[in-house]
Amino acid sequence: MKKTKRCVELLTVGLWHDSVGDIALMQATAQQLSIRGVPVMCRSISTGSRPCVVGGGYLLSNITSGMWSHVLRPFQVRGGHFLNAVGVGGRGDYGFVGDWKYVSVRDHVSRDFLAPSLPKDKEIHLVPCPAVLLEVPNVTYLRRCPGGEVMKDLPLQGFVVVDCEAEWAHGKIKEPLLPLDTRPWMKKGWLGKPLRNQTRSPEMMMGIMKCAKAVITESLHMSIMAMAVGVPFVVSARGGTAAKPAAYFKRAGIPEIVVKPNANIVNQALELHTKMLAVRKLEQDRARKHLDAMVELMDEPV
Image: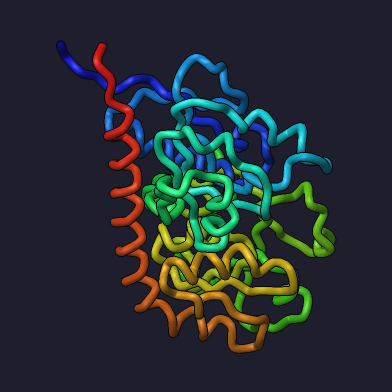
């Protein structure tokens, strides 16, 4: 009897959450599963009729109350599913994950939150976000395609992509800047500043980053996209913004890429570039092995 890979649902918030990071994760996972011969249907609510690849993001959190409880509840599917590189946002009862075929999280903090709810013999894999495998875009092509207007006047290099209010507002970066916004609905305090790009396209955003001297961001997924591109970057940590990237890059082996806002921040990105590229290769290898392991469990006779 011939074996084939069964069609799976890719259950993420990328279809309704207006964040380029969630869109990037959804695209990367769908691309990588398709490359491995797995038919994929991207969904925001499961049909319950087929296996789901669930994640990433903070889909597992204290969901018994609060404004996100009704939104996160559809991700509590039961059965032989696959948890894909999620962050776990606090302690809770995650027993519904106990029967899943494959469980993976993106950092040690998430593993420690999840472990008490699972059987003692249930392995929790520590893996990178699949977005680190996004294909680096061809900038020349992007400038010609629909939507390329946002790139047509950019220099090939020499400016700094900024996605953090502190450096922009206080003038700590003295080089030409292009502010990007990954979440315009959050109404950041710098909305009145000029020239903020708000593209919802991961490809376009990565194309902009590819042309830059460095990327300074507060966003976990924008930093993961910068790593995928291979451009120098650091994560600027202000207050509560540091927890997710700090945990993620500690697991990846480059915790020093998360820095406090300072006047030398661009040089810090450049100084870490060689080490970042070495970590990037390791992360991409780990992500491929993670996806291969999931796909191996998806094979079913037809």
